[in-house]
Length: 166
Image 1 (spheres, rainbow, N blue to C red):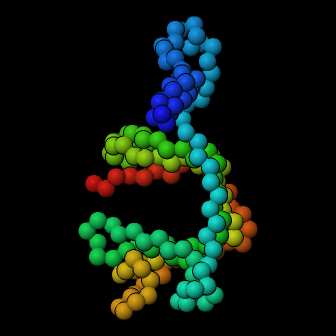
Image 2 (image 1 turned 30 degrees about the horizontal axis):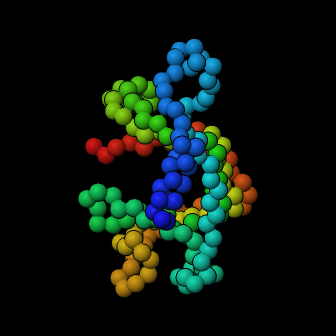
């Protein structure tokens, strides 16, 4: 009995939620407006972690990247602050001109990340080279190359290009 009631309820429900999918003619399409693309917005807050003791008062976030054919890591360490953006875009473009003549020599695709309205507040990070993705531990070595810190707001606008490895 329960099975029959379930089938009847499901049949009635599917008839209520079904929609007609059909192609639209040119005249109908002209009445439709929209926008192409994808818009991303986010606000990220990187805070110090007091439980990590290698930094006085705690450490911020650590990002380690291991380039191909490398024994070490490029590290953004002790990342702290707030980073936010609205209208981030991704695009693949062909670089075949500009850049003082280097674009014609490059003549290849690159990923373009567009920043329409991005900012960071009270931010800091350290750019370093390291022999390990994780910090601390036996044999850990890190060479700090640059430390950046700002108290206040920094606004960013423009494009970042990411080029493929040869």
